[in-house]
Length: 75
Image (cartoon, rainbow, N blue to C red; front, side, top):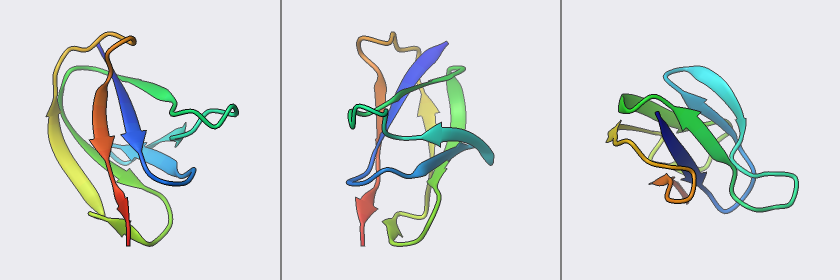
């Protein structure tokens, strides 16, 4: 099991392996940790203006206090 934070400058819907996971941002405005199994996963965000459009990465085991970070930039 692993926790992931998906960073982007504004709230966006997160898709992991083409399944919606909710927003990348909690109601407080802070990044929201998402739970995934460790292993290879494809991440993408809803909407346009995202670079890269998707990322496939190998996610290691990570606890909630030290989540794996996936970062997208606004273009």
